Image (cartoon, rainbow, N blue to C red):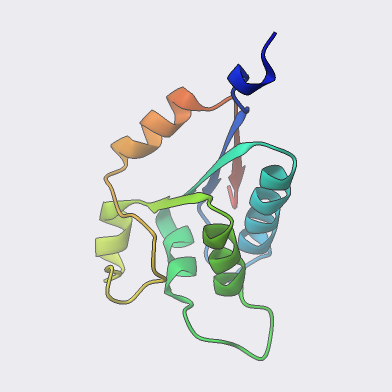
Length: 123
């Protein structure tokens, strides 16, 4: 068996709770980073109030889930967020962290189809 032809397992993380309401955002993003280090292909989908994490662009003097999200993106993890959830919260590509895509929620269904595991944080 050729090791180069083995596809990594795919993990999709759904974050539905916003930052500072609970530790869901912190735990979800740290889980994404750990899974990436373990060899998983990882997707993060921000949904409902989870989309607020994308808005935490500036440094804080306390724990900042936005910083964790930036680390996730730098490690090559795909981050997408629900278009309708974003519009409802006035979040656009101009006021969120760079390199986050804003497709429709149907994209989440496509991620589910391709995933070996799905974890939901904040449910």
